[in-house]
Length: 445
Ligand SMILES: Cc1ncc(COP(=O)(O)O)c(C=O)c1O
Image 1 (tube, rainbow, N blue to C red):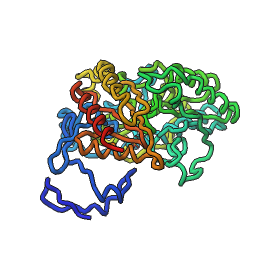
Image 2 (spheres, rainbow, N blue to C red; image 1 turned 180 degrees about the vertical axis):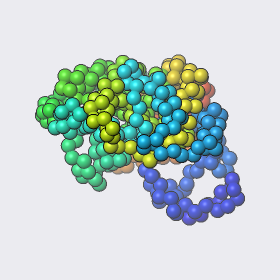
Image 3 (cartoon, rainbow, N blue to C red; image 1 turned 45 degrees about the horizontal axis):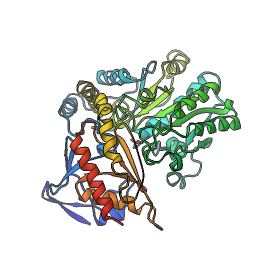
Image 4 (cartoon, rainbow, N blue to C red; image 1 turned 120 degrees about the vertical axis):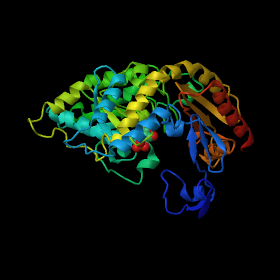
């Protein structure tokens, strides 16, 4: 199929790009294209403005095309496009690590760069295994994830992840994983504002699984402190604290996957600070550099880093892991500029200040057609729709498409709509997003 590209006047073919996580035939029959972005908005190739209710894909926290980031990338590209990160360094990578460490929780000041959240997931699992080996506990190999967890699509993340559809075609790519149940509990927690009151006891299942496998075999637990991709599942009060205590009791490492929650999304640098629960390893990506260039990282507790690095013989590579593009100069330049922008504009604090406005607007959808739950924290909101009889997920995608046609970008997972606007969002824009959703829900079956 061919399409006219009004920006260049040339024709583009839709056939060759096999699109990720997309129903390719459905999409290409009626494509939705974005061609330009600025601040809170996208524009389609034919010039229609779309209000960005999702910060791209939970990643453009400072809004689009921010000048300091654009200029930093341009300058870096013109100065040094690429430098190998193995046994060679370059200043901007060290600066980027320092900037990320500056907002990381106390005692977590070592940063391993990756190029995505998926790579951060696999890297964190490898660090956990390497740590136990360095401590003389190499039998600790089992990784426990959680149902409905999403840790990207590489081998470790796929297996530790808890979304059945993502796993089913790849049985046991990685052996030695198990899962605790998800925290979602509509019966008790529907329409909670902020953290739900019920469900801390779901963490007890971790105790059961660790006992079942024997703690001497369990390396790590990996969870999103707030599950995003599977439909905005906010941790019940006391739940994360319990996970932390159980991990401590058994010498198991706790990995927080903060690829979505990192860099202000919940009104603090990380969910770890918002919930006052400190993991041992913290995965991030996306907003690390406002998504200007692919980048991710694992933020590591100093003691874990030291056990691996100081435990190896002098002169030997301590951790045989890394990517050609770890600490890519362009990604790092964007990270330094983005972190500075977050501080200069106090965007994390702004997200926290806007939370009540966002919460009130979102919960005004209670009673709207099809809505069976609304949940929120920081600048993340989930709106769960009643699945259509015989067609689960259909209502969700239809709502997404109709919102796009009405000029608003809203994400969907099955029948759950998700909002995560850039942290620069204004009250009127929040209201416009919510009004668009209300109108669409009224219109669709
Ligand atoms: C919690 C979490 N982990 C990992 C990932 C994977 O990140 P990426 O798509 O950059 O590989 C995502 C992506 O949305 C995510 O939400």
